[in-house]
Image (cartoon, rainbow, N blue to C red; front, side, top):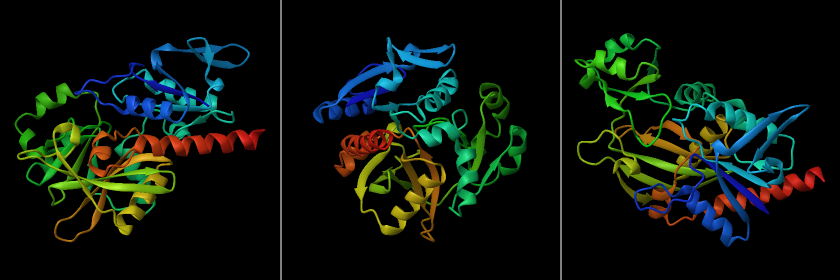
Length: 304
C-alpha cells in the first residue's frame, strides 16, 4: 500500500527542537510495511487541460492509496492547494485523511467557523466576540478576556486584552491582516487535549500553564501529564469533531474550576501529538495509520 505525506518542507526532521509528526507517521508506516513518500506542497503540479491532473515528482496523486496532508496555517498558497487536492481525490480510489472537512473548509477552517458549528450542535464554548474592527474590542479592556487569532496553533499570538490597552495602535499595525477573537477566560490553569480518530477518543492529556503563562500548549513549554478520559469528556470530544466534519483531530477542552462545566476551546485538524504520545503512552501514529489502512481497503473494495 502506497502512502503520500504532504508537508511544508517535504523532509523528515529528527532534531530535538523540531516537531516530529511527519517523522513519527513515516516510521510507523514503514513498520507496518507501507511504501511511504513524503513531499512538499511546492512540488505539486496541477495540469488543467481536457481534465485536471495533479502530479508530484512525476507521479499522479491517484496512484497513492492514502494521502495525509500536514497543513501549515501560515502558508497562504496552501489555501488554494488544499481544496484542489481534496476535490481531485474525491470519488477516486485514494483515501485522503479529513477530506470532507478540507472540501468544506479549504480556506477558512478557523475558530470562527468552528464556533458557528459548535453552537449549531449545542456544544458549549467560552463566551466569545469577533469583529473585523479591533476598535470594537475596547469594551472588554476592563474584563478578564483574552484576544487570540482565529486561526493559529501552538499557543502563539494570544494576549490578555487588558495588557494591550496602551498598545492597541501598535497591535493593529502588526496584525492588520489577521482575524482575532476576544474570549472570556475560563477559571482554570489547565486544559485537556483529546485525540480523536474515527469514532474513538484516545486518552486525555492534561496541559498545565507554566508560571506566569496564559497558554498551556506543550509547544509553549506548558507542563503535560496523563489523566483518565471520562465518558463525559469522550462524548463531548467526539461530538465536537463530528460537528466540523473531521475524522482525525485534537480536541482542546477546559473545565471551569468552580462549576466543572466543560468548554470546547478548539478542534485542530492538523493536531500535533508528540506531547500526547509522551504523556499517555498511546501510539497515535500507529493508530491513525491502522485506521487509514482499513478505510483505504474498504474504499478500494467498494469501487472494484
